[in-house]
Length: 564
Image (cartoon, rainbow, N blue to C red; front, side, top):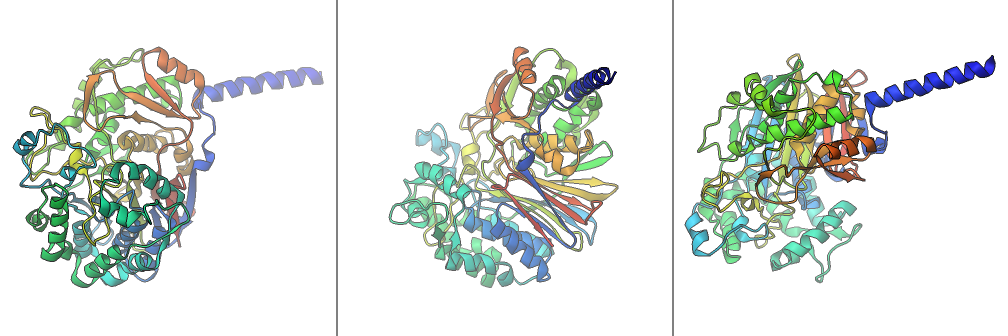
């Protein structure tokens, strides 16, 4: 009798396990990929422990989230130049607890006014290489700091920049992640002597654990602290930048820099299952992520178990549909007036789903673009409830490789995203802001911010951010689990727009059932299996059950959360 009982119990357990596998369809192989930190008074998430501690100290000194974000960005531009710096652009979403308003900041720079398509033709150049001086656009980062500081800043600039100046003068320890990026970037950028002067010692690349110094950048930060952030774009400094670019063969001039100003913009949003999801408008591609969520609202995800073939097939196909309109948003909004409501609505999403099938892949013209690689990501909340979600980078890698004489930073290569084909929707234009796939995001519940989310390397981040929203809202996962489960993302290998049929490759992180992957391949999906997680992501949650703030960082090499 006892043996019969045990046999029945075994079969019941087996049936339960099989049912559970059908509902979940993933293995807990990524449990150590994400970490969580709770805090009462303030929370900081950045790419490095050094920058996170700097920002936390600013909060403790009485600074607000905006002061702390600028301080962290300045440190990261020094210690993590492979992710960004003052030679790049900046995007930010800011929640001001005092006015109870959400603000968007577009601090992206424009292409040189003197460089026309005709000059490319004259020079017999068919594409803009990402290590070319022709790829350089106006660096918008420092003007972004200026706008944030003028509108919200509290502490003196010399206090905000003090840690960055100290580390630049006294030295900082190079991390393994940055050292590896240096090695990759050196192959691409070694043709510039000014690059080698800053980032090599006796022609040898630094290794992890080495102590690095950047006195030139320290002097620049001192100038910004004493003369104000706008001094970056004024005569003496701007002429140094312009001369360095032109000596390398580029066209950026002092007038381009002097004319540059960031723009405060109205964030765009959709309602999703009782939550408001906010992104920045074009030239950010945040609208692609919102389009994805608008389309997937048409599915009852409760009937599509996480990790199942049906669920992953739906994600992949909806991703293709969301990318269909992407080329429409590549133009600088200064010249093209966008109406997001024309795209972000149920009628438009239902039209796209006409071609959807649950049994095969969409053989439609799919368009994908290369996203920024490593990215500075900063998410900070202070005791007053202010929130900043900031993205900042040099586009591909460290940027163009051109280092302005005596200034200690690399200029970005964002113009390399342009096409030089006349009829291309992303054709090069003077005085134009290139697109950006940096997607700082803030979610709201009951009129209050509930989460800020950002990626530390932007590999197909629209799809990744959308999955995180789905994990939290549709599958009601606990925050930490929502970051530990396997993700899928686009595998992109080119740096221009790609237009051809059924060319989207999808990478799937380990943990998904192998049979599910085989089933997806069988119906026509192009799948790459990823043995190690390939991206870093951060999120800051407001007012959890156990604390005021919860910070989660996915991949310890890509992000560090601290609080107090």
